[in-house]
Length: 189
Image 1: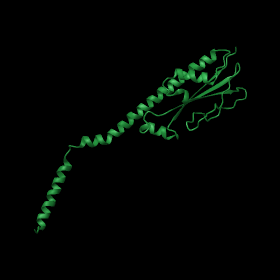
Image 2 (image 1 turned 90 degrees about the vertical axis):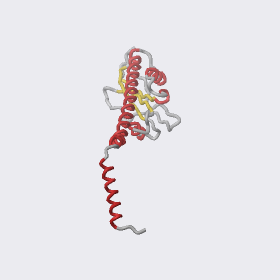
Image 3 (image 1 turned 30 degrees about the horizontal axis):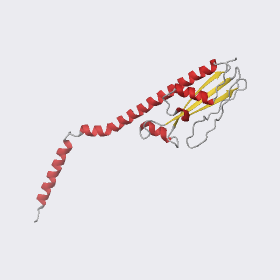
Image 4 (image 1 turned 45 degrees about the vertical axis):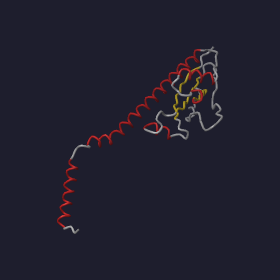
């Protein structure tokens, strides 16, 4: 069957008209907006939840450290050891997951007369190592200033999306460090 040029042009013109009609329709506008905006809202929601959990954990860690240091300061004559301090902090900060294995404490004696700033790098639990010795932990004498620095490691709630992805990408093990520090003076007996 031989088609004429005008028949082909008519069909092409009909397809163009049909295409223009479809392009002028507004049925899918809400769907397109949803597809574009929904991932952004989910990203914001997941990041907000992650920031909320980080804030809760850090606030509870700060509070636990403050209460534990208060007990150390007021308990004159008592020089608590590493495990005692760690257990007291973990007992007061139940929101830190697996606290005993994920918290590392440094206690550094600071000399106020010959001041040298504490080391800038903090010591955290390295889950790649089997044995992790205490880096610096010295109990002070009466009237000595002590710096107590605590590093708690945790896994992000949503490690594959939002803020959690960025936090987990900063370490080899997927854990993120949360550090708090405080200073106190050993009260005399």
